[in-house]
Length: 178
Image 1 (cartoon, one colour):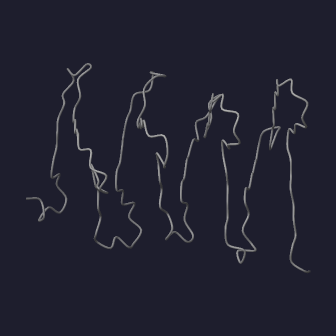
Image 2 (cartoon, rainbow, N blue to C red):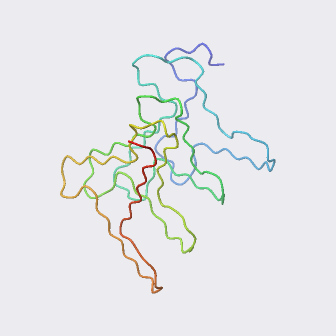
């Protein structure tokens, strides 16, 4: 029972230095029910108002010389739905997703890749703001304080069918009166 803990640790699994390919913590669920449920639920019920940097889940993974290592890897075999769903609906002045990559050299702060050969219309990224009253909203802002290129589009279309192709297409409609 850890309901009286103030500054201690409720559960500490020390792995030592001898683990090679084993697993420190394994949880398995073979249930097939279509009922909504959670395999792991981390819930902070108390009001943590203030300036302390409270964290719901912290992963401190300090392996520096391994290009194949991952601090977080999510594998999903689902074909519909969402693999990652971040609900930041209550955020007002903060950031829904914040990525800081201050030591980048030749890497990427965000990388989205697809090798799908499906001919149907799909997007690698989609930004959508649905409320027409949000007139000061900006769909995408790029601020570059250094570097030679703010936006670079490299479109290598190899199709042979006769069709119009675009490196960048902008469709702008203003429906309200000025």
